[in-house]
Length: 398
Ligand code: CTP
Image: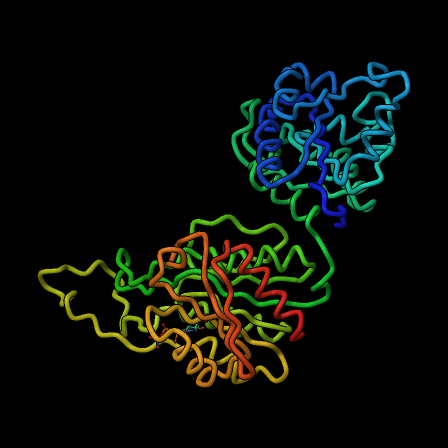
């Protein structure tokens, strides 16, 4: 989205639902991500959270009436024109229905009707209200009109029922909003395969061989590629990260699982980025019962080599870019050049993990792009910015 260099502007609409207090956190998350936020509330919303709370958070008057602003202002029109995104969180069944039917009987519904920017709603309600065909038809109407309706989570609801209707986690809502605000079409129509995280190689049902990969790099790449309009398949080993918005996540455990999932997705992909720290070795045999240290030679687990996913993709790449990583502690560029050859990659992202600011699990990296043609050295950058630079490079290769 083009915002001419200024902070993206989000108008958060708060409606009358017990989950209204979670909108405070959404406001904070958007502000932390660099957005300017204003709030519009329904009368019902104000029963749950005082408007002073949002005014303190945003340092701006809450819009809750069509008639209370300056006589020269037309609050719902001005607010709609101000916003780059209108985000209704939480959105009740009633407000969802009003939007679907073009009813504009208060400040919030009038502002949505006057929208000139994308609108996103995060519904939250009782499971039966959510499942009611009236609500479902309204959701379909909104979706058909290009309004993004976030899928409610399932769980224990405020009314005591268990089922669908919970507000999605606030970080997911903020991420969905940011993905709209920062969206562009640079990779539209391109299908990217990304591997991420460690693999776990089982020794027995309770033990495995793993490594310290956090998965942050692969997830940052997937998030940024999706924001650029790519169709992303993220084949990921076990990590504790949330799925990036708009990305197809294929969870796997072992190197063999990752190999199979990646090779299958590769058939339909235009480019691959292998950011996973795949185990190089796996136990030759996987015991189906817990091994005893005293009796069953746990100290002499026999290992065999795993299949190299990057090399397999490189060998079958044709004209498709295949990007690999080399995490090294010494002779970084020499090893990266060797990997470029042996794995038939288009580019290796070389990472000196002996540095404090570039180690496994850190939020920054200092990398170099190694291709047949040259080596480009990057400064220390946040992982999200490294992901951006890698995708900038890929855009020149696609
Ligand atoms: N890789 C892969 N499949 C494997 C092993 C590695 O796709 N079975 C990919 C990684 O995702 C990464 C690159 O290959 O892009 C890393 O190369 P690798 O040879 O694994 O590096 P190291 O494990 O550090 O090996 P070495 O000790 O040989 O340097």
